[in-house]
Amino acid sequence: MEKNETLIQYFEWYLPNDGQHWNRLAGDAPHLAELGITQVWVPPAFKATNSNDVGYGIYDLFDLGEFDQKGTVRTKYGTKDEYVQAIRILKDHGIATIADVVLNHKAAADGLESFEVVEVDPEDRTKELTDPFRIKGWTHFYFPGRQGRYNDFQWHWYHFTGTDFDAKRNQNGIYQIVGDNKGWSDDSLVDNENGNYDYLMYADLDFKHPEVVQNLYDWANWFIPTTGISGFHLDAIKHIDSFFMKNFIRDIKANFSEDFYVFGEFWNPDEETNTNYLEDTDHRFDLVDVRLHYNFHEAGEKGADFDLTTIFDGSLVKNHPDSAVTFVENHDTQKGQALESVVADWFKPLAYGMILLRKNGKPCVFYGDYYGVQGYHAQASFQEDLDKLLLLRKYLAYGEEKDYFANANTIGWTRIPDELDRSPLAVVISNKDDSAISMYVGTQWQGHVFADQLEHHPDTVTVQEDGWATFPVLGRSISAWTLQQ
Ligand code: CA
Image: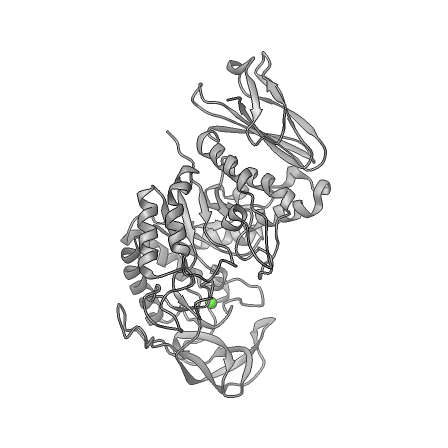
């Protein structure tokens, strides 16, 4: 029988720096399996700038919390052994683990080097502001705490395209490194925001350099078998040479398994740009559906003024359903973060209904929405609704999907399973007043009583002789009607 896949992003930005996250994840494995989670996307496991680093200030890809580097053995989340153990325990519960992989840049180098640069305009990185001059930059990585274990490669200035700090003058800027075969990635291979968006932060890897490419292949050939990981989440790919990425993923799948699951964060809501990127990379990996997230954000802000029939417009899940990872919130969109665009609380259960109960897209539940976020940037937990939605997805969201997008403020759809004895599902959403939609669920259900499994609507509904029924919903709410238990 068909089984729905469901992803969880098992972290948020403000987790405590207690080194216990891998252990918490391992302990949560039975619960996640029970909810129908099939894949867990975990935060970057690599040694970063310090133990409080969320993981994107990456220092050493070969240190998973094993060596005394950057003032700590463990990472924010724990040790290498705990990471590997969590992956194994998840696997024992039928759950695949997806590693967050940060390949764009390296941070917190071990030494300074002197090299030639030009300073470029941050608003247009193709525009040089100066003649070439020498700076002292943090580009020498030799990993003294690891002593060449697993890999003895040392990074130098010529393995990078640019950096952001000149220690000689104590000046910040975007410094493009000058030399033979240097320069940003070709404009056609990275995002075109700011002229050429190859440079994001820290020391930016030069994917034109054969030693860089070789080292990343060496790393993948070590990392994948060492950890037992089942896939990658590729961070910041709009800043990375798409030609490298396409070949890298092709070769990893060829070396390990065609089932090795890869999806990327290409942070751009533009339809055409997403389509072009998928084509440029031969559809070798999925992308997160950024446009759908922004549609959810806008719908939450506008309330009844948002036309719900347009909620999927421009989205990846509409245009490229087989390549879309749908999500409501993530570690970058939550409060206080770089891409803050929080989806309004009242709209979150509706948005989750639209990713978890539909046929297309691979939905990703955000840890911060499930468990809530503590502290200054606190966000509510939606565990009660999410538990119900996840179980509906696990057991009942199967088969043909038919849309009943009634009007700008009320939309609905049905899922009719192939098995005649399995309950159909009828979902109704309103962003304004109490409302209802008449939908067909099948003549075999005539006289049967349906109830809202989300327990938002108190009524029951009896299916008519002709197989139709009128399914109600409260204002600014979602109801999911199935056979009453
Ligand atoms: Ca880059």
